[in-house]
Length: 82
Image (cartoon, rainbow, N blue to C red; front, side, top):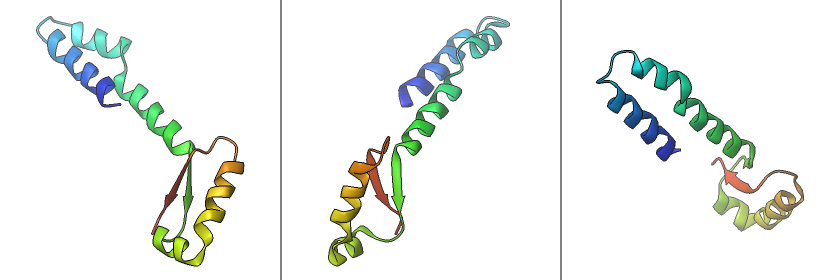
């Protein structure tokens, strides 16, 4: 995402010297839109669980959460919200 936004900013900076080019480049290369889609895909692949990881490990729920994550379709990452 960083490289997409850096490219978008660089193109805008370079083309700012020529009239009307920045608007054309921003219309054709929508870096912020591409980066937003990358973030959305990453969020959709994440399973969020209430609580802290340490508490889940202490109670024995963490291995169960990992097993549930493996059974989920499309989820690849487990994040505790505590």
